[in-house]
Structure formats: structure tokens, C-alpha cells
Amino acid sequence: MTAAQVSLDVCANAPLSSYAFACPVCHDGIRKPADDHVVSLLVSGGVSADVWEIPAEVLEEKTGPPIGYDDLLDFVLRLEVEDHLSWRAGLIVQH
Image 1: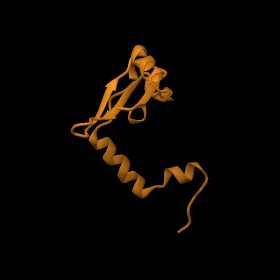
Image 2: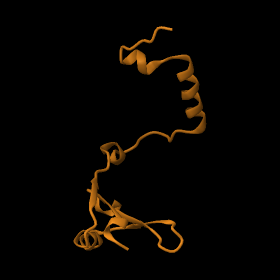
Image 3: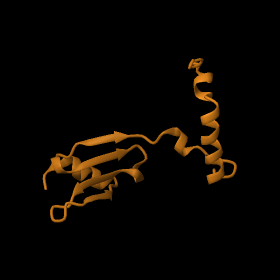
């Protein structure tokens, strides 16, 4: 396997870093976690790293009950009746 056949995704939050490759036998995609040591080994072997960060929203503390199926259905039905996104942006669409 060559360095070009391995992809390396390095996250600023190290436990979420991973590397991936296609199995040379069955061609299935394989993804494995990559700690700092694995990242160092792969980079030293010529694998280029794609660095990414977790969006701040993911790490925010969530309060309130989780969204349920009924909440989602109500949201979709409301979107069909009112165009809140265009109204808020001042982009009222004339039909």
C-alpha cells in the first residue's frame, strides 16, 4: 500500500482523528482511529493530512428535551406553509 492510497483526517480534537484506505483484498473501505503516534507515523511515511476542526456548535451543552419525530414533522409542515427563511433574510419571493 502506498501513501497515496491512505487518507488521513487529523482533527484538532485528537481523539477524532482517523485514517482510511481500501482493503487490497476485498476493496472495502476501512477507517481506523489515529492517535498522535499513528498520525506521526503516517505523515513520516508520506501520507498527507487533511486537518479539520469540530464546529463549536457540536461541543456546546445541549439543554431541553431531544427533538422527536412529531417535532420534525411539525417543522416540515410549517415550512410548506410559511417561508420563514426568506422572510428573515428580507428575500420575500413573489409568485
